[in-house]
Image (cartoon, rainbow, N blue to C red; front, side, top):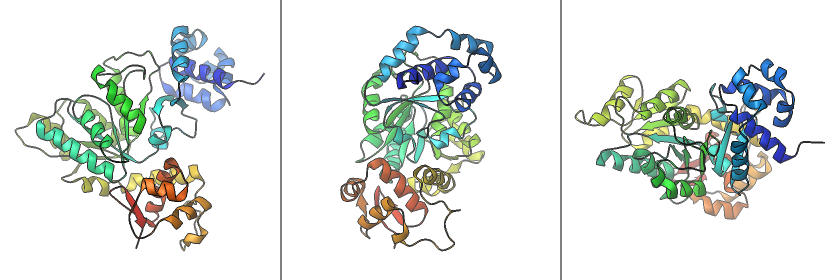
Length: 379
């Protein structure tokens, strides 16, 4: 009897609940065509994949209440569990050696593929720091970038709210609890708003409460989903500096705003700048610094959407008439006048998810120019 989707989902939940290093469980998913088959393979196969004794014990006898809670959470529309072997798993995050085995997502999984910038900083920013977080996040959102952060108090919340205040603004929140909970609790409404306009993400199953060690671990996902990380204000010992370090280790860009030498919340930014982070004074400095990683994301999107790759192209760039059908349709509705996403959706009949990826590819190819979230043909 073939595995049903619910059977596969339950098996994937059990793999997630096994905890520990993700590598062995990822090996199981890659070796077997389905999570249920990986579980049926039994202890010998689990041991062969490198699972520890504790992981094998949990795989054999999972926490039934947690499995049930996860399955019930997933029953509602707009909730997803995406394993690392799924094509919908964001490619930039998959690059990390410590990438989560699976992501619990409330909202649109495609939001995790949209090019984004992490905006992080102090949980108790100065008034000017809060203003700068809002100003930079809003400006970056208007360029079409997604704003990624951790839903924490302070700079995180300022960044999410600034993106939500922008027409067509996108934002992604990575949290350190199960998605049936909110931390801090006062951000319940903000978490719901982010899920409506983008996605809320966690590696932790429903029922997981906030624990101190989960917040630094969450930061690697914030950095891993982003083309770069902007630190607005940070003390010398802060989660924002952890995120910046993880971003640098992942080969992503790190940006820091300088501040007053009398502001202790600026010392972390000054250290980052001394260590090689890009000093930025304007949101345009961030956008211009993202080219290299953006090109990598564009290549991954080409492969995912079956668009021509650089290697597959002839030496002379193809004319617009030789583009794939959907790209030709998009090209035909573009002109020299900058046009917003809503109008492009209406003109082309394509979805926002399709257009976001296609416009990024065409921008990287030099066919399209993006200005404040509006697009036109490159002159």
